[in-house]
Length: 149
Image 1 (cartoon, helix red, strand yellow):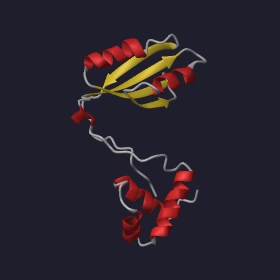
Image 2 (spheres, rainbow, N blue to C red; image 1 turned 45 degrees about the vertical axis):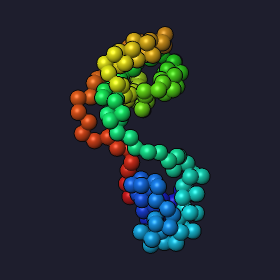
Image 3 (cartoon, one colour; image 1 turned 180 degrees about the horizontal axis):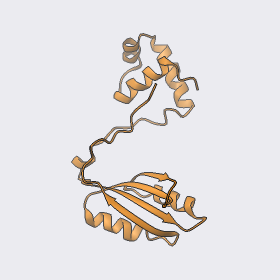
């Protein structure tokens, strides 16, 4: 997909407020509303825009703990473990990585007990060899809404 300046401007507007009307976006970036409509449809069809969502303050919802969990899986079972973990409700991200461990999980919990249950129960599947859990002390920045261009 051609990520020209117009597409980048449209994406930036949607990242800042996905509820903006196409007319408002068009006015702000200097193109016509039909141009915005056709560009957004193309971005959606090409799966550059996957879906629209609200950005929540998880701490205000009671999720005071963020954990970064390294997982080592049994050889040959990494993908299966990743798919299982990706479907667990507290999991925000699963990354298949290089290095000493196979994957990193980012997950949020209401308290230490919930985190403990997650590690001891949900990650106790037979194909998980080892976990290493880190608790985030302070979130300085957490925002995946960006585009560079």
